[in-house]
Image (cartoon, one colour):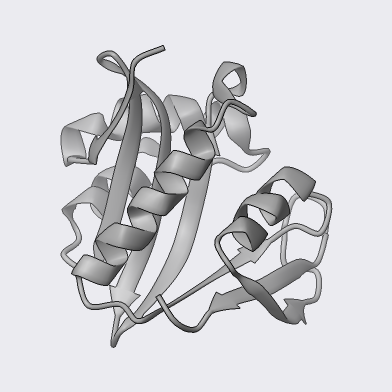
Length: 147
């Protein structure tokens, strides 16, 4: 496995959509990723194994705060440190673009993601009741107030 990280561009939307469909019950569309990649207020990074897109992470950066929108890996790459590397890269990229704090929502049932965020010092700040439309699961709101 030869994993690298680079910024997403609009032409990556199809490959990112494939990762999204393999990861989420209600996936974003290819057009959504194309729009996100073209938006000056977003930062999306890709994880690649050679030339193949195996994962991505994205955030919005506004007024010094970064809001993580998504992070996903193809199933065969989970649990191998790729997510940790990718999430660390988006934190650094957000800092370089002026973010001083970062927030996100996570499912209480997603123990792997919760462990990843705890590794980077994210703390629980609240709950969004019934946040996830596929099953009505709540979302835990996490913040890292100092990047």
